[in-house]
Image 1: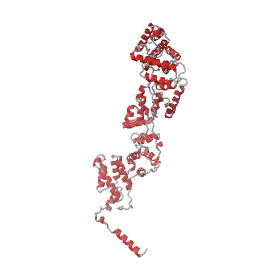
Image 2: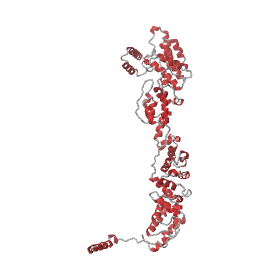
Image 3: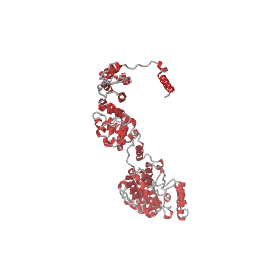
Image 4: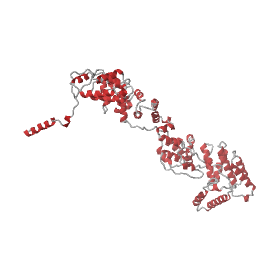
Length: 563
């Protein structure tokens, strides 16, 4: 180094020693050596540690909380702050902290940890370092708290969370932490398989919302609608509304078999697909095979395969919500026996009506014959069957047979009386004076006095534009309806059906295709740092008696400095 460089270095050192403007301000004097020696008796070494402990003791003696601490402990804290530290200080701090919140414990233990105070047991030192370290650290198994020390299971569960060993937690630890653990931690335990529905964790939670949430997570079959509404479980409520029939489209109320009106819903939601299937929309079947669980897909295939022969298992026949789909899939090749099931009885009635509307009298007679022989049928079905039998006899001009059939209708029905009067009047007329026996509405494939007959007539005329015979039949039906409406006189028209509702398929939801309610998905963040921190704080509070102890014997060779 040259002389010039040495001179410049000397000047730099002199400038560095020169006091700045802040040197004029008074500096706070540090504690003297006597004070530092007195604090050593309480296990506090160094000026910085002394100031940190004094701030801690002042906070612990806050008047808002002082009344909950033992008198002797407050007196020890007062004595130490008064300049006479004693060896009982760690015990007094522990006694005061035992009556404070976990946050206060964390604050105090942070001071102990950062100041390096020798207030810790050997195992407490390792446990505290683990709890205060932001990164997960290992604690030897023999130094981990016992169940009697870790009274709430907080240390065990936070250790498992930080080391990804939740699945190894014992049932004893699980029972300790269930009453108090944050819901996010309980969710972590559920995901790890530590907590199941058999543990019934909702029984040990004090918060009603926690109880409902955990029940929905583990035992959804125990949840009712009120509970689902309370926790905002929309998937459960959607399923419930579907099963209760509350989600039916308003258009569905207007869809009737007799009017031939069907809707087209393009939604692909599971319950929309089920609704479309319940309405007889076969295009929904393919979508359902992707949306339903395997067991229900097999049931759906049984529904589809049964339509090949008209034979279904009893549990499928009992589901009235499937009847529309079954009716669309199944096209009977012959008369249906109404004795087979309630579904077959209704299918037989509709098959007879379809045959009449299609002017297939041979098929209609075969079906009606089976219906009237089924004496165990519903009274309303029996009435419609005998009414159709009377109509078929009327078409053959067998008025006596028609009257016998009408008389078999047991219930007093105004429309049946109308038909009886028509038959009686017709019998008094000469054959050549009698009007055509058929009902013109039926010839158009519609129930008696249907308001949509004009549209139906136009549709059929376009369909049979090249069929002269069919066109003549349709024109004759059209003129007869016009004449009846013009004179407001339908007395010469045989009324069929007596009650269109009897032929209507049920609007029930297909309950056997609705999947069982699934557990509520977790709503908390997995391994939430805030939850882990809450558990850590609880662990510090629980392990306080095993961590804090009387100070170790002061090291007389310890150098007392202001640093």
